Image (cartoon, rainbow, N blue to C red; front, side, top):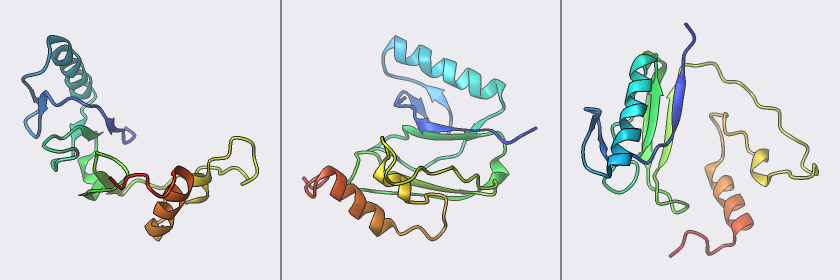
Length: 140
């Protein structure tokens, strides 16, 4: 069976981790959270992040069916979002994405960074973001 990874900002503060129990929130939030837990349970996916990802909640989730593939992860505050920056190291093989030429219409300036590289220069990434969005972005 191939490794499955399902991750992102699920925004379910009504799910308490690591227990995976649902409490609080609206009835609609609870119903949606239970659907997520049911789907991940049926696919044998376990939630790996146990550190707070936004204020006092774990809202950004990382599910996998192969918990041995998660070598390590770290959660750090960032000036660019109210969510923390999450870096996850896995044993999965890296797939390189084709990057467009810099002058291609619709080219995203962030595409010049190889986010799959272990030697990515995060200071250069922050500089690029500040240049694109304005130097005052994230400094409040």
